[in-house]
Image 1: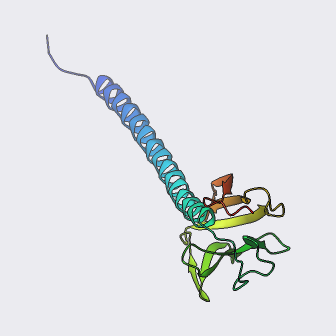
Image 2 (image 1 turned 135 degrees about the vertical axis):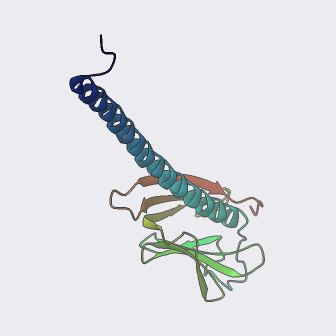
Length: 171
């Protein structure tokens, strides 16, 4: 008897091997796509976290502008009618503001503007709501942001937080 493999056995084994390799490559490709999505979400969260922490720290340390050098009326914050911009006196006594401009979150001090978010991120919405009208309550600012990546299938993130002023300046 001859010991060997037939052509049919060889074709079957090559076919089975090809099916296993193709399945493995598809699984590997989908794992790479998921890893890319996770990295994009991670970058979105990191950028958003930085911007929110920066804004919260600055707003928490704001001072009452009693000399009206930055804000009229001697209040703590001035929010524009569109609610997309806030101006205040920071802890160094400088006039500072946060605003939305060209899908970017910006901070302005001494007429110089700086981006708080990377170019890979769009800020679709920025709204401020203030509660410093009652002089017997500590001033609070609520702000809401909507972030979006600039990918073909954009990832979105909505965040809202409230910050109260750290130093009491009640009468």
